[in-house]
Length: 124
Image (cartoon, rainbow, N blue to C red; front, side, top):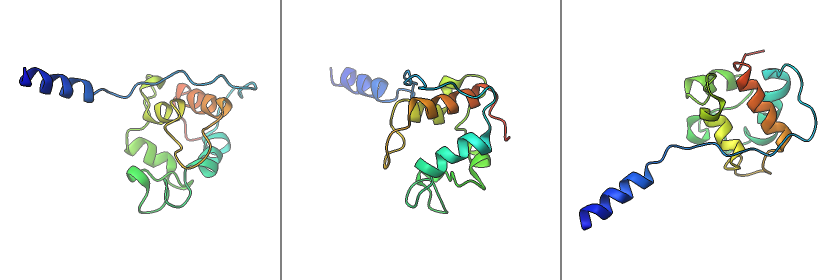
């Protein structure tokens, strides 16, 4: 019986993060989402403040400061351009788990991130 309880605990505690449906964008998204024009401003407003995802002590080792964010996202395997719903960045913001210290992202901003990843997350 004890073995069964331990095995159950291990199986149910090791679940992979899955995405949840994000709120619908409140306005039309641009045809092409630009990393520098659309995504970096989201990071600047919500993610890379002191104590979060900036500098040498960035949370989870992920620095989203504008000069290193693109490289960091791919180095830390936060983006899956073959399946947006497998991208940790999308999962975290769509579920509302991130950002933790500021207001949750709007449906529009989540939509921008989702569409940028769907468009193969170009550094444009």
